[in-house]
Image (cartoon, rainbow, N blue to C red; front, side):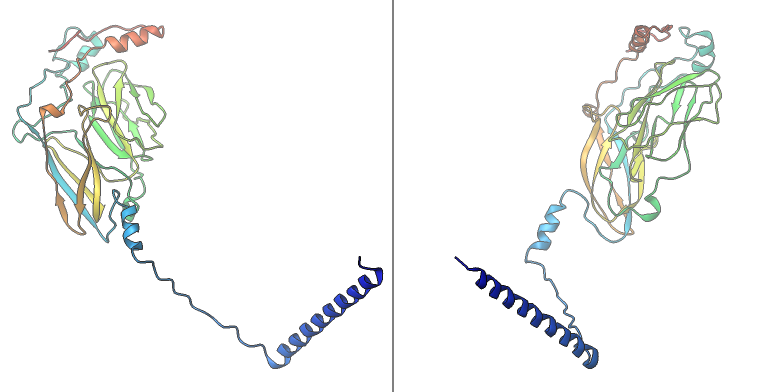
Length: 332
């Protein structure tokens, strides 16, 4: 056992040691003040990558985009391989089954079936959507932000115009009408809030339809007052999307150079995704135009649904509403 005197001696030694350290520190400070402290050394460290690290990084990004300097363009034509059967119009000219006020507008001219529009001469397929599967990191700067100029979704002759509308999410969209009868435009989004509003006759100012989030693919738009009316909206989170014109042609500009995955959509494409092509690999070169022509046979497209207003009518009657069925029961 340590006695009291030994503890006292130990404390004295500790106190002396602290005093010695304190006086040494003071001496060092004084020396720096009068003689100048030595300049601190600067050391540069270079870290070299481990062998194979670059390859591992490249493998980790496989399946996405291969970054390269510059931007290029993708053009092409989508054609139908075979003889496309001509579908009868959804509404015939002067259709006697329509209400008088609708007949004057909706049956003034035939309402075509736009579910599979093939150009008889060129076999070009309209309303096909080609889009980059994922938003790339290196979007061309002037294309990165959604445009502030609004796009318009019109209604004329009891048809939606255009049939397929692609735009950037966040871009203003106005629903307008050039018809003398009202429409109830109703979107069916998966990630955004529904737009379900009555559009007054000849409303050219329009009602804003906001898509704050991108959708994974085109979503359907219907008119609850005219059940044959159907179209598609595709809000997407980048500018790299195109819809084929009446000749099946498309063009996507400002694509980052490198290898990319594209999806190809059509409203009668197979399955829930309606994709004719998934993860289509295309390489874009800087300041060059890549061409990719696509062709699909009849077997790639689902059978067109029978056009009838019964389902819409039944749903509205369940909610206590009233409806007059104006559409024929079936189509060949």
